[in-house]
Amino acid sequence: MIQPVEKSFLGKSQPDLLVVGAGIFGLWAARHGLKTGKKVLVLEKRRLGAGASGGFMGALMPHMPDRWDKKAELQFDALSELEGLVGELEEDTGTDCGFRRCGRLVPLVHEKTRDLVRYRKECAEQHWCGKFNVELMENSELGRCSNWLAPDCAPFGAQWDDFSARIDPRAYLQALASFVAAHGEIRQDTGVVRLEPETRSVVLENGDRVSAGEICVAAGWEAYDLLQPFMEKLNDGKPIGRGVKGQAMLLEFAHDDKEPILFHDGGYVIPQSNNRVATGSTSVNGWQKSDFPEAHEFDPRDVGFLEDARRMAPVLKEASIIERWANVRPRNSLKVTGNAPFFGAVPGYDGLTARIGGFKIGMGIGAVGDGG
Image (tube, rainbow, N blue to C red):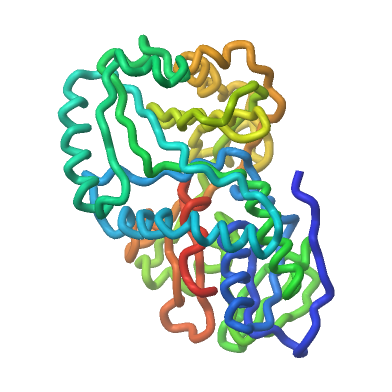
């Protein structure tokens, strides 16, 4: 599990940049700030990666190029740059983040989707700028995947892309945290209960106030309550986002780490290093009303994804479960962005920025931006 990393804050009486949240978004904001010479303080309510960043899935999958919009473009740019940025982070920290451009296979269960894949191939040539490809793999070719994807689950072949990748979320998070702690400060178990952007301050759970030159809110789904008073005008007074609970399981399975991600009907099979395979995941919108309302509580009834994973990849049928994970992802409902992530200044509040809403894609786009 992720170990706490802290260091006494040195320098000015107040930081140049105060980041609320020590997940992937928040730690990248801190790293960007430190790289530009700012004094940075990160405040985390619980522990590093206590929300959606602390899982083990690590899928870095692009949206398909046939449905191109600003969100898809942002994700393409972020995923294109991420390998290099992760490489720099690894050099700075000596930590292997487990990045591998492993590709993705999507089984085709309807004949008509074959034409869609051919169309996506054309769109990839345009929108993916000739850097990455989409291909139609025939059912008879699936044997070259070492039976990783069962041919009977892909009666009309499979869609293949060489853009998708994976990363080890916990190693990635630890690398970011170690860099930030070495050059700035991370305070865990320090919750922020209110923003006061007029004075560029935040109020802590114990009543203390902390001021900074800039405040960046990157607290996952819990950022919505903090930001609602300052962003609701953008949303006609409606909620700016909600939390969606997800669950996953980590399996132990000996493999050579050469297989691609499998993805079908919202379910993932992600080969990680060290003989691990991540499977998931669910999406529960009304989770606070369920029998398992806590973010980290695992619902043993909601595990159909494991059966689906073993159907797609029969080699996993005897793989043992070594960890179960549950937590909540942020999903934006902003009028200005839709469900796309929000990166940037909060209009009308100088010095207040937000990085929220990377629903299921946060691991891949966390490096976007320059600290705000």
